[in-house]
Image (cartoon, rainbow, N blue to C red; front, side):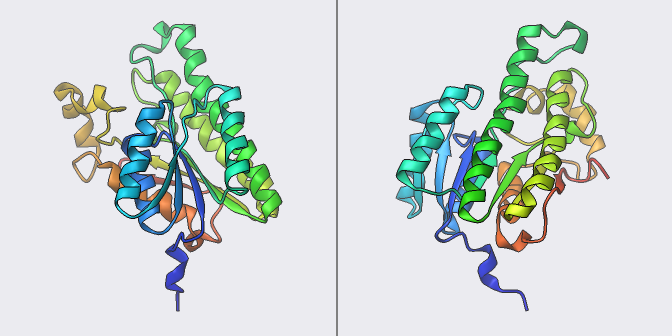
Length: 255
């Protein structure tokens, strides 16, 4: 019989990037409701503290720490703070991302290419390196990367974003293979179109929606609260024999 405690995050410290809104915020709230002490992280101090404060008011444990994952110094400062204040890290959710260019791939400014790679690839890589090292030394942990269905099927006018999300899938598998011996599991969730501010260029465009919705068997876009449980599952002991997996949560789009 399955032990019901495997979905319990009590005593676990979970760092969630891009957690000031959208999927990251929903994940932080869900994990906190299941007993985790969540570190709510994003670029702006006011934004992360607002979410962390709201979680605490609801009876959960949360700390807000600002970090720009594309800035190596900011990432190092974040992990120094985690080490000094908590001494461990059980879960990392790499969720912060950027998509500064929406338009033809051949017209993508190189500055936008650099920015997207800086956050979506180098940022994820650096965060994963630091987290996996901590988890190795403490005897294990879990990393979950937010990729995208775009990593499997590049979307029109989202070329460099799609390319970076494909890299996240490969990165997930590479880290999973090398970190498994340390009892560090590394998985990814591939959200479909989700109702967030990040995706507003698509979700608020009626012309785009008329093109996209017929491609989704369930016929609608997701809510952030529908993506968060998949991230929580892969982070939990319920997924103790899962590593290197890339789980679509897309209403059937990739089917």
